Length: 436
Image 1 (cartoon, rainbow, N blue to C red):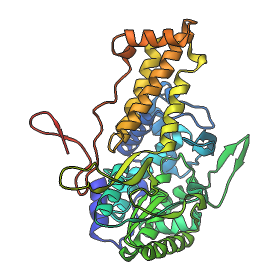
Image 2 (cartoon, one colour; image 1 turned 180 degrees about the vertical axis):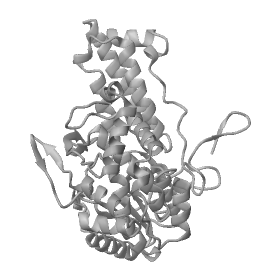
Image 3 (tube, rainbow, N blue to C red; image 1 turned 30 degrees about the horizontal axis):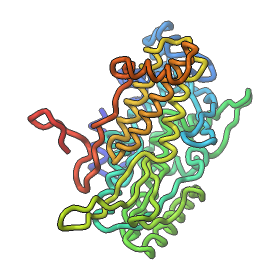
């Protein structure tokens, strides 16, 4: 079904699809949606019904009820539960909206139907929340463009993107491809469901709740209007959801690109975040830019016989990313966990480090990895010492006497330096070694 929808949308860019609603409540689509929701293992919504409760109630039974409600046109989404989570490396808190499990299933089913249609239109400059695309694909743009001579960078971030997208403009973007009235009404119901915060429900005419399954797709559909209007004369655009960056070849081009980007966002009813909007010139010894968790800076390689080295764009975890890693490790080794077995604490740290290093390994991150592992060793030694009511030196002694530092994983030898115009993924060669 998805392949058929994608091919139809790709073959006719002006086509508007009018028979989609019946596909949302198809039983195979609903089961696929449930599988995605279950795999995410999210928290309950305002009804406090967990994924385990749904399994005890009966997945088939719940999907049958949702299918019947959708067919009869009586399905109504509940308001999402509003929570605030800390932003990594800052004191700010990010608002997160958690729909109920049943609403997440319906949103996932709707996304399964709509995604191939919009994927046929989305442009290569968009990298966020798209199938077969990742943040590292967007990061590769910086390496390639810098190597080609683009040394001026425009960086910006949309202020409260998910909370300020006007519903009218968002639905207009969706209606360019969808004319099914029942499906459009379902999308409007998702947008108008509101959030419950401190016991009261708030509904707004703007925003797509951050945390909703379908919100990233709707946001990309809205931003596609700006992507489509962008012209290459202003520079090369790389956008990951609401985080955008433009690589330019001159200061004049960068100034024009920032003005054009601001105008395009204004047409969508959005504004750039002033604190994160600036123009930076990449040069050896100068400042760098932060993008998608990495700090990017132009550096010079070590001099060799015959030449003084060459300038290249290096990247490593940003300060916020490093602080986030330290905060997580400190949380996992806090005093409240002294009763937990050391093996359990080490397992939790290893799980975090594997995920964190798995993302940041594609960069010049060796020194950053050494610092984070040293910090993990310090916190683990303090944890062991406090658990046995001994001093720090005793904790370090136990750590270094034990084989493999009590099982804490090593981060040495896993870094892959980015190269211009080469695939960032590591592939094994016939000899079993890693190559790029």
